[in-house]
Amino acid sequence: MLEAAELVERDGYPMLRAGHGRVCGEVYAIPAQLWPALDAWEEVPGVYQRRRRTLLDGRRVWVYEAP
Image (cartoon, rainbow, N blue to C red; front, side):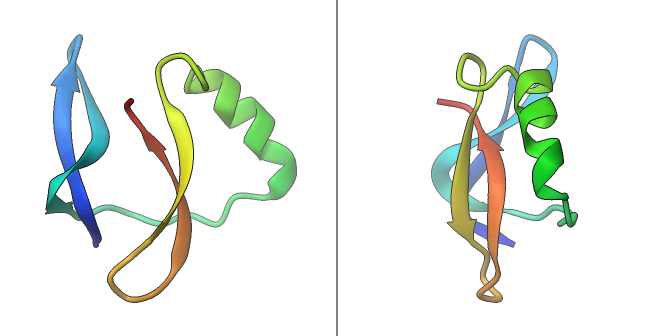
């Protein structure tokens, strides 16, 4: 679970952004060599920013966050 976040909808798509709530989701192990392709798919840095966040259980994860 991620704190200080919320889900919003933009152009029919759910997006994560900084907020005052909590968001539940899934965590995947992504090989480092795939990040450039994922960033391109998620339109980083235009539509999303990839940020390092800490989950409630202490794990550090990358998330795609709307600006």
